[in-house]
Length: 481
Image (cartoon, rainbow, N blue to C red):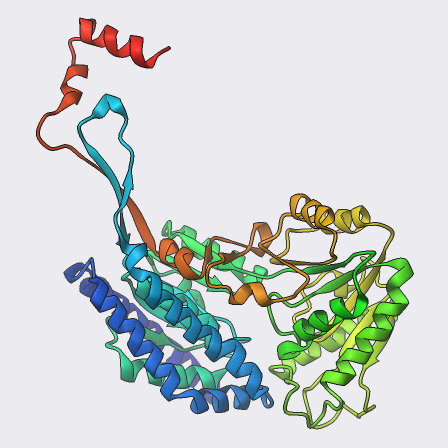
């Protein structure tokens, strides 16, 4: 009871603090509504130094939150992606900020038209637990590039990393420029209801609905980076080893706790046995052992671990065949939250593994009769965040691209599209709305203000009333033909 009272008190304190900081950031933005190129570059470079100077602290914090998180995965997914994003932005920001000249209709000459990219104001960012650093820093980089001020709600499920990022940001930047907020679900709910100039949320579709509902009360524009069940199509002719290696990597990376991880496989039925055999081979090659292997990441917490186990129990009870990819045959049930990858065969639609986003090391493999059978299976379900296709036939590649609506696509690879700064990243339908990364992130957090400018002679006066004059007839004869 005492602990609960303390938690409530702490939540109220955080809510009061974030509302106070929001007011401070609004006031600071009004004083400087158009930060210069030099100011934005300075902020990005300071953020870069903060990350580079604290690499080991970040690695250690994430490892503590997960109990075991591969150091190399943290470097690749959290640090390399963030630094690459900053460097790409530093290189291109001047061109993004440039006035975008537009054409003027002959009817309104002489004049000029252009678009000026203006900061929106104060940006709210809600980051998830699976890539705590990358998915908070990525939106912040875009917000800095566009000249905004920001507040970041970190995940309560990674308390060590979230506290570290709060401390690092506090030491590097004034709180009226960027502030980190930590706290429980009550704090997150209140955060969603603040009248931001833009709110970016990364997380589950279910929570995304609540975030959008809260934002709607203030007409706050939102970018929702959600998830869903990202399918992988195996073609009839692709070399199985060429397909399985990137699939195994994309699924095992962070133990499948990735929004764009392959969620299920659509494999030609005559190749199903071959797929299962080679998948086990490559998982064993990448991870000869699991339990004490520092390359293989744990499930984040006991709640998520229990959720994943319940999916397997449900599939077993309903008649699925489950294959455990555990070449060393280790006992994984005690003293660890590590889970082997489980292939689920003969899955049916009434099983949770085909209903819920898995977000963990479970991979259903579904037999298909043709490429159109696979496409129909995908299109009968909500649009995925990612689609993966393995095949060399260019006509079939294009057929897949034309037939499936997905947030993003990788052909003959998995998850790599997320790391391409020049590609938009975002979902569609139930997998999200809006996008960011690179220039698209700059545009997401900018207002493209249209400007029409007259100087000297004003030709528009010829259209003024009274109507029926010869000039009106001349205008209509020219433009209405």
